[in-house]
Image 1 (cartoon, rainbow, N blue to C red):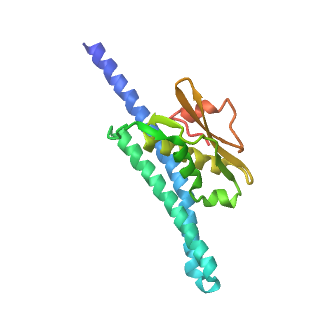
Image 2: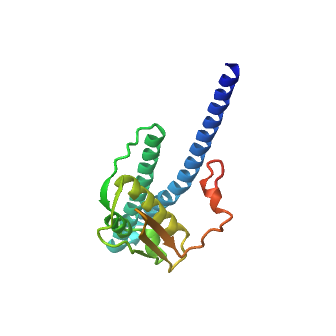
Image 3: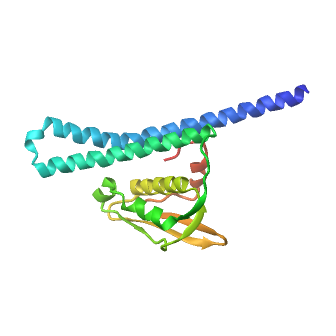
Length: 199
């Protein structure tokens, strides 16, 4: 009937608006997050190229190391973009298996993080060894890594970031807690709205 078709058209229009809002929000966040490590790489390489005669070997090595770490962060962000694209196209397969989430957390916090080092932030995990969960390891790694990166950004110098877990019924609840500036209860719902970018 005409009424049914009209309803389907309105439904499709709403779904398209929501998809576009989600896409716009994602690219806004991505562009913001890409600028920081890219500025690091460009800044250090510019210093090396324009003032190479003023640096000793140790300083040159440190600048190259910092550029390398920032480049790895850029690579991770682009990997996240690829994963998001696959998900939007329905090509991201969920491949759950038994995995040790304590190993995933340990690998993430052990990665060299120039921003955390510069701010003297302590990263630690309280997840007991051999904490087994049935999940997609790639997705779990992506989520924890992004939460830790966000925590580093909003934690003040000398702060602490803790990855922990606890059993809740037949599930394992994983948390990333920091001593940063926090967010008010009133603003938390804004984080999950695709049509609203909240910093």
